[in-house]
Length: 353
Image (cartoon, rainbow, N blue to C red; front, side, top):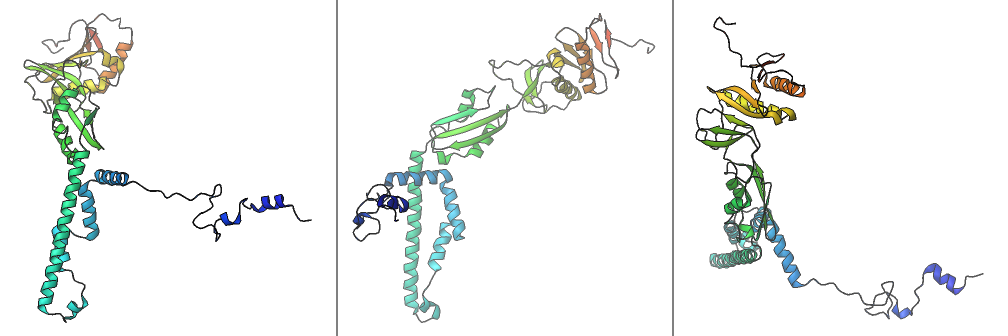
């Protein structure tokens, strides 16, 4: 028994509309069946303004110079002048190559090709200049975003970047700006970037001071690389150990290499690894260019020895963790394996004992 009409139509999915409306029918004309409604497909169009905006964004993203350089690389030329020269000398006339053309005809042909080539080059330059002017008007620096600055104020950094504000984005040279900002003694590194259409980003990495230097001539800070830094503004507090007894005033930006400074910084950096010692460490005093004593916040004074600084700091840490029942102010670290707590600093007797 043959299936009924509804079952057969469901099996083969026949469209339920006149034959003249089916896709591909000679009666369908320009109408195409889309599976749901018998409507003509709309042609999608991109507006000229949207297309122009996309082109401008692409050019702005890659930069006019990069695009021109890429095109020159494809053409294997170094400049527009070279391209003009190549076009001027280029010929594809078989009669010319065979020598069947007169010299007057060749000269006229060369002059025509040269004129056309120069005109094309001039047109390219004018178009490039027009694009550059338009992009300069559209993409202008309106915002500078600063990140990473702790002690350096935003006003100070923005003053350094005053010439950038309002300038064309394509005219900003990020590496040159970064080199300029690195001249500040408190800036270790900086990365400058562009975010189109109108933002410049500045990511600053500041030098990290680890101690304060005090001399008769003033106050400075010093980082872990022994580089002398100018003090930050008063709004930036410094809760750091103090190094005193400098023999001369240091110069900002210089690297100190005195043995006393080197040993004092070794103490500071080793103490930073042990929270108890770091909290206890208050002052490191130099005498005659050498580290003389280390004072803590409890009034006790450590007398450094000649052995490993790390071992001495570990000894102090163990002592601070104990009950500290000894009645004495001075902690003698002269011995590698133990410490001696004294009421007065030890002085050798006249007979050497």
